[in-house]
Length: 264
Length: 264
Image 1 (tube, rainbow over the protein chains, first blue to last red):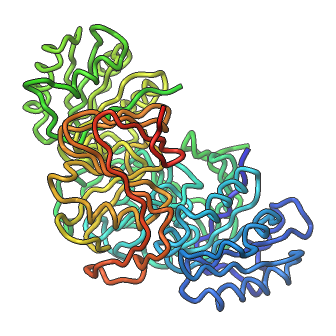
Image 2 (image 1 turned 90 degrees about the vertical axis):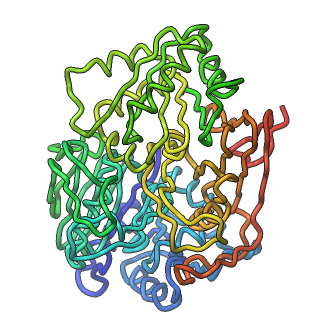
Image 3 (image 1 turned 180 degrees about the vertical axis):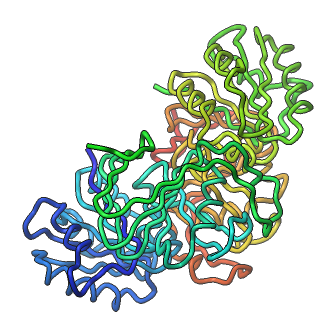
């Protein structure tokens, strides 16, 4: 048993229909769940966190706690642990995914979050908070360029979703090339690019469903018949033959284990 | 149940006492185990593989099969799968860890290797074959310099050992700074630097024992009280306060789960 993930491509609607943020709350199965916002990815946690605080309240959360994490020296006497124990929904804000992992990684707070996830909470993350969900995450790379090996930077993620590499603001920031290259680094992993105001809901590290305004791009490199990623110069365009590619929109389901669209 | 890992820091003795390579065979529990060498990390698999072929034969292996993997287009009619099914020991050679993952990742052969590991084989890897054992691996970085964020490159590994970042040729190539920086990227992970002609044997993703001529360096960042890794320029020296550090030599045991020396 483990919780459900809601992984959001950034820039989700917070003013009109709020499709994704509503889903974050309703997936908890509670009419008025308690929410904890962890703003560790942002250098401006007050601003980002306070915005979500109001939105989740307006959408019916019973309580919304904003957890600011200014640095690794998290006070031991704060009430963060108690909040997490009570929350049915935890939300990771955007910002810098490297800040998120370098500040939260290995902390008592993070271990508790892992425990709460195993107990079945909803864990949602947007933008940086989305990228960090996997075992290895992309922290930088070129945009609007063909796949090259040189500019991609990866780093260990928070490890809530296995076997994937996630990218966000995907179509909007032209990140197709960098995700293709990243998947070529190790085609055991499925690349998932998530557009803005779009999210994937993932259950049991296997069942994925798309919600929101745009789409997701799934890159499967297990079928690759040619790859020269380990032989090229950093800024040389790669030769990669025989990817499998899927574009999925609102309502589509995918089986991450079988790497195929799920029909049920 | 899963197999045992022997993760070697490179340049292991192949001529005199052969302590590590002997241990690789004897850990299988068989007097004369069958060995498969996977030379996917090397651009010169014949040379590297043939050397190990002879050494393992001299040390008593019943058979040694050298598996050359020139590219992703692995012939489906080869006998590699049958060899893997019979082997009690699989050995990953050195070379380039990015070649190893980009060529082997997502292939039928790799899925079979994962399956065989779950069934309890000995999986050994040296140098590049060592680095690739974890979920995220280091593929490049500066040497003999203080920790900086800029030059480290990481990428998704083969995922046989969780919760760690591995580095090899550790003392010999002055890689202390880069491993410190990599751990600071996400202190959930324990950094393990393995010296040349030295190895760790890991059972159940938890129990580690050191064998060989030199030592290992374990870097625990979970206690970090200050880290500026997400705020610095690429070539700026990091400020990282309150690491926990262990140096262990031949015979020492460590509990990866408790992050402490194991006394039993």
